[in-house]
Image (cartoon, rainbow, N blue to C red; front, side, top):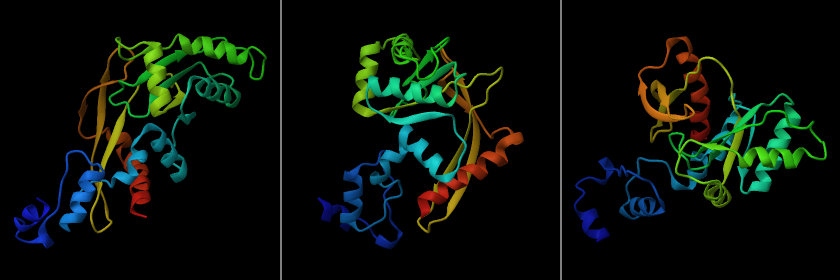
Length: 227
């Protein structure tokens, strides 16, 4: 079968594979055919998760919310929030995000309220109780189901940013086979849902008041993957 496909390619120098989803199988097919795969190498999959994103932002000095990544259990989540409270005693809320959640569908919101002082004997129990009352972006998920997914696939927890008006911009880039980072576009996401975290659409381009700033920061991430 591989030989038949290869024989149908008139010029291997001008051919490439553009998969809808990239897995090790698509990569193996490209290697066996001897043509490039125009997609992310699946060995970098971890960087596409929430935890991977936070790690890349940290490594490249891109600003991001106070939080913790690579959380794989309820006890670890409690400890992560406790560490965040120690860093910021005024912390009033957090959002938990499943590593592989999309469009806000893996998000859960936690109001922390009047927690004991950091380091107090009752601090961890109080945080655990707050976490058990988390609110989900999806209304058909239970606490136990959510923690099961968190434990198996990992998650992050971040400070819940408070304010009157919010913007959720994004930058689209690609890396060419020559290793060049190209900025394709910017947009402002349109969000809705119970907690304002569900992706509904986007407006192109992003607000010019910050479009230059976000493309400059995004270019740092692109450069990381060229190295």
